[in-house]
Length: 439
Image (cartoon, rainbow, N blue to C red):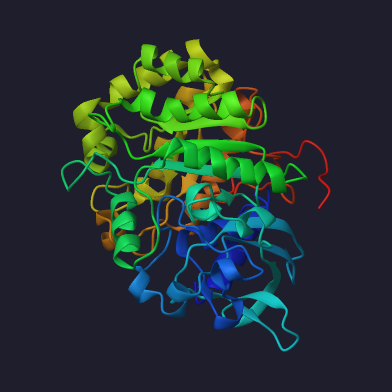
């Protein structure tokens, strides 16, 4: 295609059953967006909620390469509406790429817009600074550092352990920059707590609960790096589970509790449940057997793909199939040097995985791969996967759900274009809407 606009319009025409909003959203997620200085935030002192870097960088450059966006953070997310494509309200996680053909900038009336190939294609809304971000913990830490919120305030993201014990080239997942993201924030002098104190988490949640009077925050996610030995004397189930136990004791029923962890043996999974976790995310990352071994070497070494999948199925005995929601990283199927060479092959493989899990009543979800430049796959594949792959995945995902009579998973907010708040992929935007949502 001669331009990105031509590519996007061609895909919208070829796949009319995929919401046009999802086509733009997937392109922004896979390739990033540039920000004019007029569209940056004033960090925690401004009126716009800034990007929190809640676990990964989700950027196409290191902090020193982002220019002013490294000093004045971009917004956590943006909302697209209107424009020549008449876009419905679409929430998109911000992934900064100074060289992207997409750019957010203010016009002569100081109204933000999204520009593609130099033409304005939508209005842009930015998240207002929530009141709870304006209040600090007793020790001076910010709520944004301890308990940031994403998905337009729906989800509190508690990265309890900021690094991963799968470490180095022979163990780290080849698309993951959690360890580098920790290092770059420390190098920049930013606050970035390695292991979050349980009492600090509770204090931050008290502030959120006090000032979130509209109860926009509905769920929390407990997550962090994999634990292969112990942290503070605790294994993975007890380390992450203790946060859930404390939260549920102090705020019974206030939020839906979710945990993103490894696929653990059933007794460990039961401990999550006993601690009060309601939804379990044992991410399977990539379906293909060979790619799992090559791109998730630590997980293959410590657990193994077949055992990982057995544990996912076993966990349904504890949580019920509907509450087991493994994530995969959509796009790494096509990453060089080992990925599939054609979209047809990649979609066939991923759909095979979807059918495997959905035939057991499990509804996976996915994050759109951002090729972060400090990762092996990001370095080798700076453009990520083709946009066509992402659009056809949305089509295959919805069709597979329909084949097995499944509906949108719990804990992700409302489904449907114009309603969805899940910001790191378009899977919720592409599912049928339950009912109109007031904006």
